Length: 357
Ligand code: NAD
Ligand code: IPM
Ligand code: MN
Image (cartoon, rainbow, N blue to C red; front, side):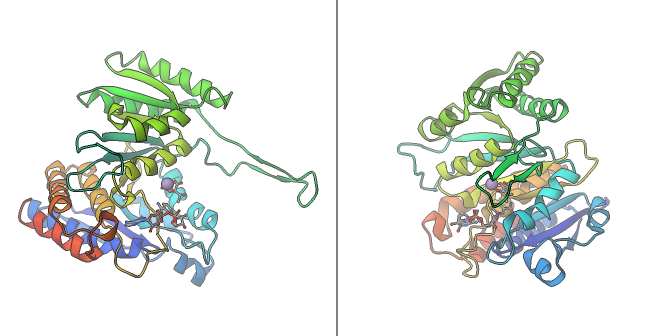
């Protein structure tokens, strides 16, 4: 029973407030299920560290983290002092790329007891997975500014879609769809307007579909797909999208379930050559930092996804049940209409996990 080595990276803003609650619940689940965890707290990958050192991470960051079994990550970004592209390309986006975490899995679910902003929707109506490509696509550093400062100033920013990178995330999405009762996959596209990469993406998806004939597939342009998240969320099961489209859908989906404070994510390197990273979908929320009102559920649920990935399905299920119960009965943070603090909600969930939720 070797301990799982986990790097704990709180980061900035509410990352520092929700991480202790994530750890509290993780420890409760580990104790109950006899799981050995070796947690290593990482002070870098934060804007504070950047302001002290001039770098987001030490030069040997990769060596320090490569031997970990997983990274448990809060949020990075403090735009008042460090430009976001500097802090994020210096940390989170580096992890995703250099550890080849090519699947970003983002579950979206409406829970009992959480007010839904969409009229007439009940738990069960919204329960789908966004599978976001996580290493290429629209997120690049390729391009530049020409004729800067002149009338002819011109900016080019390239997108990158490789066959390898596209096929592997599509395959993962089809495999996930196969495991679900509805076996339905929605492919996000924009092949009407983005005339090179997106028709090609559709072709790759059609080719992959031939290997999974049991899965029903529909292609939707990203504009109407977004509208249908709001109007017909019950028609979605698994949704696969490019990096940018997946980013947008994975805030919109959770917003349709009441708050982005619930939404977890798993940045997976399915080959397990490198550690995978588990983090809330949300960011550092400077607007509420310091008040202890951030919803800790996204962080806690991300911890459950991490335990599942490490082979502890029962511990995952316990945590999700505890989340369900606390969302149904309280205490709840203000984004859920309650007045509880971050730690009151985290403690309530940890307590239920400890009782065997
Ligand atoms: P954000 O997700 O931090 O906040 C958006 C809104 O949602 C805010 O009003 C915030 O108060 C609210 N919110 C977020 N999480 C919440 C929670 N757990 N409970 C209650 N309310 C919550 O997005 P933003 O404002 O665009 O970005 C702020 C900073 O975070 C920026 O630096 C951005 O680049 C960074 N960011 C980081 C990550 C990440 O590390 N994965 C993700 C998104 C944004
Ligand atoms: C997310 C975030 C990041 C992204 C930002 C902070 C770079 O929004 O994880 O969804 O766009 O991937
Ligand atoms: Mn995002």
